[in-house]
Length: 294
Image 1 (tube, rainbow, N blue to C red):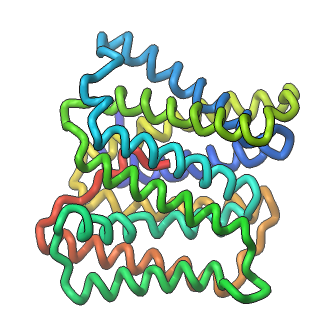
Image 2 (cartoon, rainbow, N blue to C red; image 1 turned 60 degrees about the horizontal axis):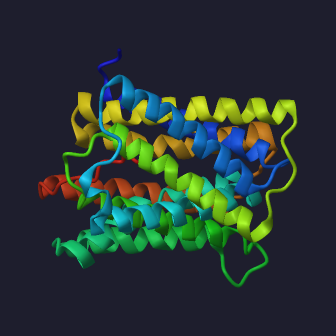
């Protein structure tokens, strides 16, 4: 197995972008709720088999602790709105907004964990949120209401990451994987309860869903491995390669054409996130592991 953290992180981001493409393509035929439910059940089944092979218990006592409950609620909200976003809005736009998650996590760490942030990092965080506004452009003709789903999904993922920081370290990544995919099932069932199950998938769409499950599990595996084989400070910045992969795939497969303001806003978000990470490392602050990233 590869022992290079940045390579594994880059592979994970490419696979996550491909997962989004497969699900977006499938949801052109099926409902978002049905797609989420099937995807969640498939991923959960893989991790359940994996947990059984490693003789890991499925129910950790901490599952009913406050951090895990908050993590689960945030996961449901994040996955629900993020999936709605890339099903209805351009993949390149949704992925660009998602890159602001580390900035929200940094802000949340100040509010909830009392971390100290100097004026430079405050400036970088504010600059990053300006990049989000450059992409959204509220009040203009370029604004689309569906892009709000991307913002809500990003906030949900940030809440999940903050709750994960308070989760007990005794929980394995496999256990978190089982619970994470279970939250997808719950999010999908909520959607089906509201909007109905929709039509059953055709053979090609079923194949896309199966491929998305396989790609998603592999992406998660690469992501968790990347955080264990190299320096976190060297590996985490490669998380931003997901935006590049999403842009390329969105253009090549869905014919998306991000405008200049979207490119500029994306660059602002990535630059702000990288600078915030750099300042965090200089102050020897712990960096949030993205092991549960979407």
